[in-house]
Image 1 (cartoon, rainbow, N blue to C red):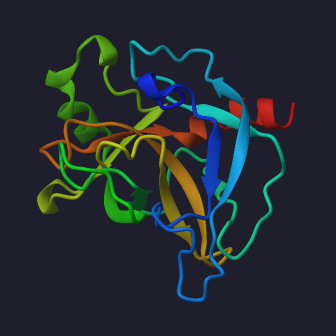
Image 2: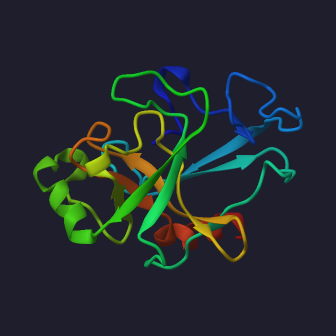
Image 3: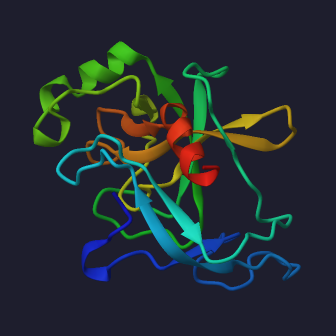
Length: 208
């Protein structure tokens, strides 16, 4: 749902390798620098509708190939419905409290994968037009840490929910895309688009 930000228009650039969005150099050595790539095509899932929160996924096509560095790396995509771990890492430059300001420095938070029934029950009384069919386990998942007040927040949407892998070492597998929640760090977990469900669609576009 972030491909068009309303008054700011369509996303035109993808910035990779960034940590502090207010600084061009992100480490003491001065070697870590963000790189901007022009977006030439935006592809929403064909079943996505702005009036709902289902199929909340999109792809960007860049004008040129990405040059990988120590600070710009690819991420694996989760292909299996089940995960080998019960926790995941969410990252983003969003707000650290509801109604607050966005973060200049990239934030990360460890979240627990919420069981399917608990996820569905959490939003059972909050179902409206945008969630008229409830949480769909095939294409959505929940994660959070209600007890410790940890969650993603406004401005984190579109960011990754990921697992850190031991093999390959220090690589990550993206299991989710931050989609929506009930405020930030409230009494409900956040909801994420389940990546594994959309791998065939992604591959049909990237490798037609």
